[in-house]
Length: 114
Image 1 (tube, rainbow, N blue to C red):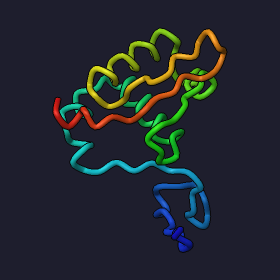
Image 2: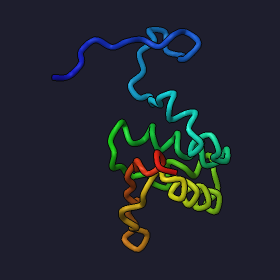
Image 3: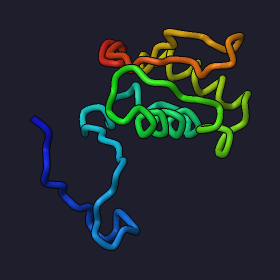
């Protein structure tokens, strides 16, 4: 059963006059304050946040070059991705560079044990 009533964001959280956003992210307090998130570099946290947005709430998602090239360099992205994997936040499940397709990632629960 899908939810039909949309809860608007507060006026300081959006530029939409009706407060309704098509896409947004969720992060619980326990995850936000966990050392796996709290100790991330700013770049890794930004990449993780954009990954959450692009995943649209799904555990398995793609994150193509076109989505990160506007805010981070290739080297910066690779370093952030490695940091996120080491922190147990994501796993890279398909490396598709040779196929010219976006890589496939999965959000991990390993961060809880770090």
